[in-house]
Amino acid sequence: MDKATAGKLDGMLLGARAHLEAIADHVREATPEAALQHERLMKIGCALTDLLDLSREIYAEHPELNPHREAEQATAAWRASRKRPDEPSR
Image 1: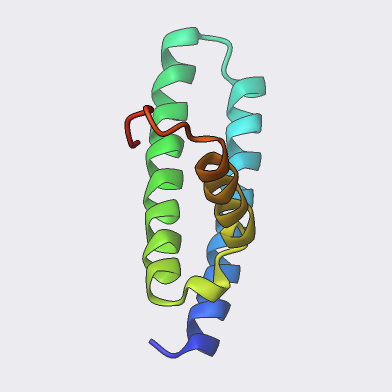
Image 2: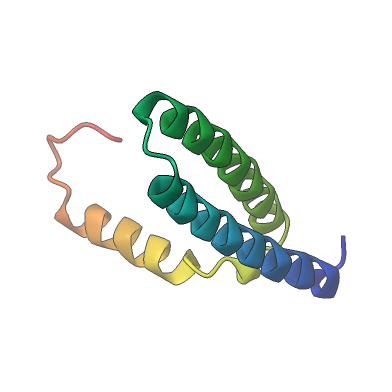
């Protein structure tokens, strides 16, 4: 997939995840029965997970689109700088 299409798709996935989060908030407010609320939230959670997996696939193909790329690189560099020679690898 070309970068422009990947970026557009990732933006759409971001919007879909935001809508699912809003739906989850409404389910929490509108479903007083704990068991039913849990069942509905699990379904929403599964949908969110699938959408995140799609985004990860896009980032694997186009790492420059990953909004967390710089933070992940900085964290990895920080961990590497703090590692002692006798410490096992992670």
